[in-house]
Image (cartoon, rainbow, N blue to C red; front, side, top):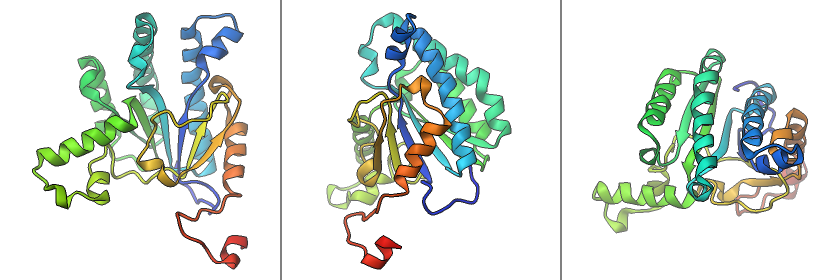
Length: 242
């Protein structure tokens, strides 16, 4: 995904992929049908990011709260993740994409943990872009895990600051997202990248995730390009208008 990048193009985009179930109902099909369509949309959007010069894509595929869904749906989702890793890995690797996974891995099956570890290891040297898969992920859980890691290292409370917490997140090497997109008409962050999204621009669309494509992404990026990012400060008028 790394190319010559215009200033108006976000470096890191996060997406809350919502609407798979509603998409399936509109097509009179079960939820699993919508989830499979959603996986196909991930690949389509990832390659659109590559063509636009967006370097990092973070996708919210399964939250720590999603375990409360019907057991059959959770099993189907996990099976789908297994299949997707196995099916898409080689193509992603050949395109130079680095794969990282954010979330509580110990709560996943041993087989899933092994596949994740293999994908990360084999793509660690890739430099054309990053796909950050947020799996069994929660923003609050990530903050708890960061503080627990600091405590385990014996860091004194007086030495814990923002840099210390940020340095113990799941992937502290990734820059914070510039733009977060949520599909399907919902307008909330739903525990996604809570720390990292402190100054991210938000974009909401009514498009259901399986229908989200390159044109939708282009509209989000065009909207992002009109924003003035102050990061709590106040830029001078010439810079803001220039």
